[in-house]
Length: 273
Image 1 (cartoon, helix red, strand yellow):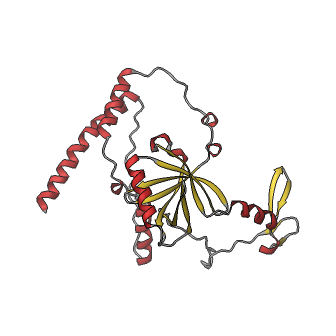
Image 2: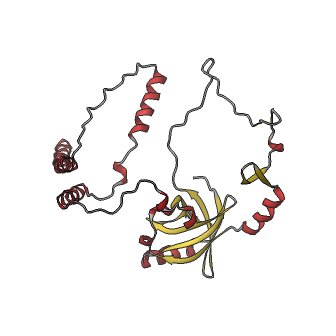
Image 3: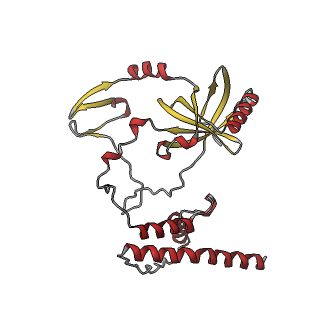
């Protein structure tokens, strides 16, 4: 793993030197835009429409649009002065809270933390104390020239730092258009919906979920590379269920079949082995 940040975790008067690693990765398949005629990758140029010419990196400055068409310029001196105030290589723990108190909407990006050479004892101590108390830490840190809020928690045997959004970065629910008002729910429909949730409830096993689209796209790319003919699968028939009660009852019926199918499949695998 590539170390993307080095610093320390400040826990009271305890200072734990750590290294930080990105915990997740984007596995989306990336495409490049090519010229249809010769398949050469396209380049993108920065062009000033007023001067009608290409602009080099040295000629570009940062501008903040405070009114439509009106900008203030923020130069490198301004940024350096600001950076000196925020450039703190420390993850400062502010509070300890319960994980259940934080709604998942606040979570952004995950990072693994490991101790540097002299931090093993303090790292182990904090990890054990957090495990024993069941608490997570709320901290502040500066990463990529941005001060961010973070949650520090234990995941298996590693400390994980989750960057989290500030409250003013989460949009208000009142801004969401078309939300239905609170209305009386049909008791029979609610009963079936509750039973359906019960039948579909299972332990969270992340390894059983996969990106079907990415796998199909990868298979398509491999076939193209090998020069194979691409076959298009027929679309599955679309079931148009209009009545809510009918849809719930049909769903409940299907959900009851699933455990039987899984059990039969498991028994078949056991017999084969």
